[in-house]
Image (cartoon, rainbow, N blue to C red; front, side, top):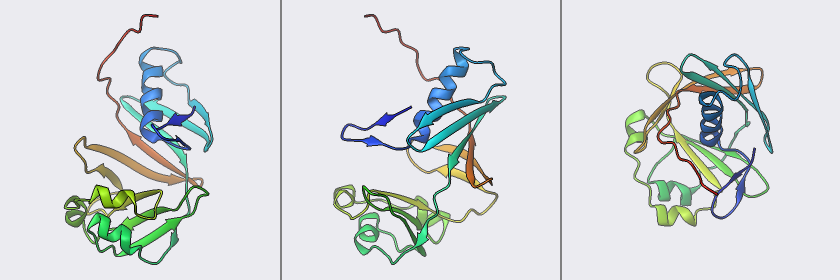
Length: 169
């Protein structure tokens, strides 16, 4: 499996992987108890399904503590309590921790400024007030169950078919 943006190829896209696994299952292309394994530039990505929930295994990235990236902080309008960095050849990936869920939800990035910030990608998160559950705090929200096992990150969630189309060639 490979993923492309309008400008470049990316080494990992969880949303597209989940969508692909969902379609493969919905169309009956593999038995429901089978593990679907995608071969990618990030290594093998496995997807399993239990009821209406998918769980996918991703490689764990070891984020190293880093100095605050002031341009990134200004672009996101945040004062993070932790800044982590993961170096890749095409640019650094940053993980910022907000001081609370409320602060995380209140972020209103300056997208124009963010484009020129010295980061290939950035994730902003906060410590949960309950269990280890990811919440995508954007216009299209989503819930992601998270667990760590065997040096892999396992993410679980539900997928929904939004539309079907037939392409005539």
